Image (tube, rainbow, N blue to C red; front, side):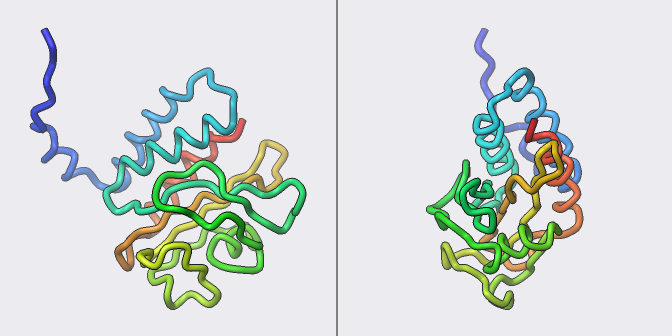
Length: 168
């Protein structure tokens, strides 16, 4: 017999907290990535599953440190509209995360000095540094929302927990 999703679980999903959604998504990511060693496949999967988990994720993905230009990020696997191709460490929210090594939570990107508007519909943003096993910055994980004030400490914690397991 074929099971049909009638949407009956939607009220349950809508009632989940951010923390619960991150925990559930982390379990899904871990299950899908089990045994996968290719870092691009791992990043693409993380971007996809996180993008699908949250309605307010408008752009979700990685900017990787360019091995030929150590102070520049180049777009990696992502979900959403066209992203900026390159971002110097000296500019924007992604650059600030790469430069400082700290999570950047920006409630209103238009108030952030030097914000790079890859898509004018972006209103808030969170960027999390991602480190390689040797402790060097490998990438940043960037999420944009079309709503002001979308991100908080729960997002930072949930994303850091997931991203700590991405690079192997």
